[in-house]
Image 1 (spheres, rainbow, N blue to C red):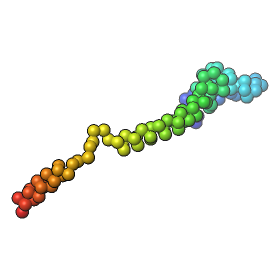
Image 2: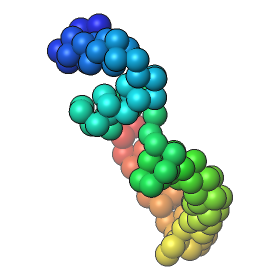
Image 3: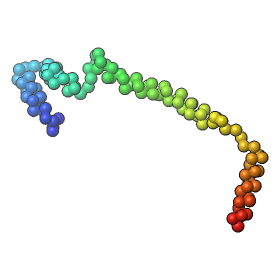
Image 4: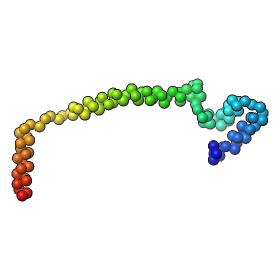
Amino acid sequence: MMGCHIRVPINEDIEAGLKAGQSQEEILEAVYAKYGDEMRVEPRSEGFGLVGWAMPFVLLLAGFGIIPFVVRRWRTTARSPVGQQPVSDQVVDKYHDEIERNLEELE
C-alpha cells in the first residue's frame, strides 16, 4: 500500500485502535467494516467467501475431468473424416495422363 491514496487514513485508524488497546482482530474487523471486505487479503471462510476459496479447485478438477472427453472426441474426428472416400484407380490414371500431356506441352 505504499502508493495507495487510502493508506494514510487506514494507518490512522490502526494507530487509533492500538492506542485504544484493541486486539489485532478487533482492529482488522473495524477496518473491514469501515472500508469494506475488499481490504481483506484472503476471503472469509464462511458464506460466499467459502465459494471464493473452493471455486478455483472445483473448476480445476472439472477441467481435468473434461479434458479426456475432448481429446477423445478430437481423435475420433481426426481419424474418420466425414464424406471422404478412397479415390479409384481410374480417377488417378485420368489425372496422371492429363498431367503427362500438360508437361509434354510445356516442353
